[in-house]
Image (cartoon, rainbow, N blue to C red; front, side):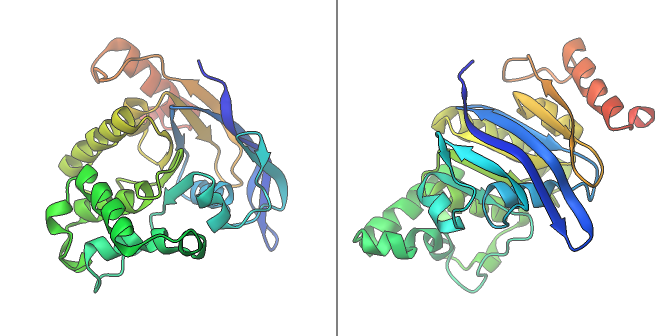
Length: 260
């Protein structure tokens, strides 16, 4: 297995007198998919915002490709090859879909590199084509379904060609059929692009279907209860004894065994 190239160490985050994240550390190996799961309100989104530098930790550090990036700003992290989507992110609904994808490509540093509009448009169109909505590029974002809005969020992150892709509840608020379709899309992106992916979910089935490892968080304050290695090849047989064993072990870990 390839060695880690992204590492979070002893992360702590407090909001006033409330501790949201307490001494969390884990590693990501290149080209892996890692699921981050825990109860509602456990601090999963807060943790993701810490490692993408939207929030600053009170203590701990983050290392990427051997560099301590703890003090960097979000744009600096993006320029080093890290991008993400967040469940509360909203598109600019009045703008064309392609313009939404172009937003992260027109950062100040990109302008200083002399990026031309046509080049940026081409990158955005490539990302839209990859997620399957390029035929709607000139439509306003308000025309998209919930599933296609998720595709837009992923396209916006892919457009900057990151090495690591962080996804916060990428299939949240979708119906069960669309969720299954989007899980297949995520695997297709991973197989084609060989990105390292960390995705936050509250769906245990989803985590075992997609991830190479599942990081199980406790209730708030978030700390790591267990890291589960998923030793199954893709595509996974969701009725196999090993799949069910791994799924049930995570249910037991977070105290939900009586619900299965």
